[in-house]
Image: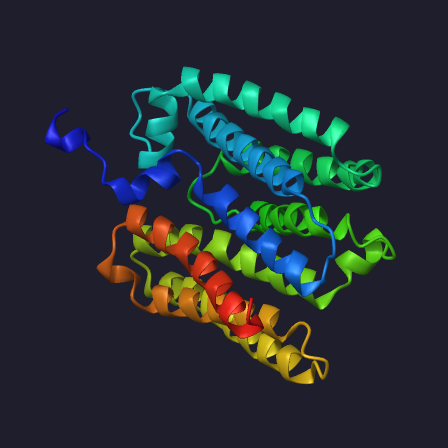
Length: 286
């Protein structure tokens, strides 16, 4: 393979859309431990990982379709999906079938109630993806917010299903869900804000993009610290230490982003959500 076509090994999780499923499964573990689930089967993690992978692959294939002209220069991950679209489509079909079988045969009945809202969120996300892709000059804030909420909902839901005494509203209103959802929104928005700032020569636009990320990251970090300190039982402290860590890593990455390529920033943004899981494990003594 020519040198210009070779991809570094560290980029392949992103190229294969394995980064998001890995983050989802890792944080599912965090939710399960925080909510002290006595029973949490492997099927929940497998179903979540497969579902997230299918959604992300479908979104990237849809993006390449919406661009219209195949000869148009694509981002590395989109070009990879376009070049290998047939294997990805086959993989999607297989993964979707396995996920459906797990839902039908292994998941508790309460999942169907949650899947109704989850389906609405996913449908809304793809709808906004189609609309947002029509103008690449603007930051798709609505799409990013919905994507972050959807990702957090799916991840938390797979743990919440086994909290038999709590309803769906209890999950949506929990500090853990809200904190993780905001972290996901900021993580997803970061790349778009960085690209938008890099494309613009206007200093005011660059400053606005900078503030749109640094301010909410600072507020999320502060709120996470407060929630951790207010938890007298210390059951959720490790969780909010993890959210605080994720916020801090994204903040540092934002301040040092000029040192990295956009592909590297995508990978590092995922790392910024995986390292907090290690912090959670250390803080909780697991």
